[in-house]
Image (cartoon, rainbow, N blue to C red; front, side, top):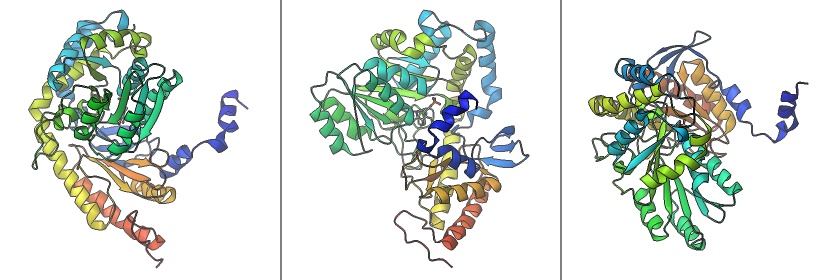
Length: 427
Ligand SMILES: Cc1ncc(COP(=O)(O)O)c(C=O)c1O
């Protein structure tokens, strides 16, 4: 046997069933040959409506507006920096970092290649032996990985259930002797679209002199300041901290630019002293390459495009999201959203129901994210639908028609539509 494959065999019984489930769901390894906005064609020639994109504003299809600056940057600075950021970098980095800082209202920012490397860079670089990291149990897996790396260095790692401020306060109080304390949360939770409760978290981190690490991978570029009833996502897209109107003191705000702005990068809002420190001690900045000049040019152009078309795009997303959620709830499905952020997870509740529904949706032209265990806890397996400004009402109507079929299938199989619902009797 090939020695590589022996690693797969040896412990397969201990592996979680993720791969097997994803394969069965058919919402896996979808190879795309053609993209026409949110209509895709896969290698089998199947047409799929794309409800798996997190490019909420549809900037991924704004080639006309975004390519020029990317190409200019590549022409001016080359295709790739090919050395660690620590050693030296083009002024484009400085310009984009200043622009991002002004945009969100921070002193300065520091670019990273993506959000994952931002967390893996920052969290272990900041905490030392005996320091405390408290993770929100619903926080993104990449923060878990970063926190585990910090634990390997001797940091204490604890967790609390999302929103349980009493549990968080107990942990902060019990560990108040730790020299440095960090609390890690999502800005917008990637499975439910919930918003971080910054109003609840901020007084606690201030009281116990902790740093609140907020990963706004989904929110940045989309949610922003001054939300109201008509504009629940707020305006400008300057992130969850502006959406919630909280002051960034005691906060390390981290955001990805890939989802909101279609530019493959991420950044952290930092003080100048922190920037200098992280340049040397955040591993991705001294051991691996930074974003390409092309990406930074695209990001620069996307920041210019945002005030021109962002508000209309947000309004479009809201309209489509409301229509989808009302349709699903009208059918009786349990939809895990309180905010109407365009991440809409439909509860399936067990592996087989999830597989069957995912397969049916793929076979009938819907591409979405199947979320089995361990992406979701057991009993909360879900079909995640992300809505973007480039989806259409016709696509939503098609999906709702398929969910009406799924409802019938579940009823016939005696499967409940909601976690607390009665199972349907077999007919
Ligand atoms: C909250 C959160 N953080 C980080 C990531 C990873 O982001 P990136 O692709 O920029 O590494 C995701 C991806 O979906 C996310 O939802």
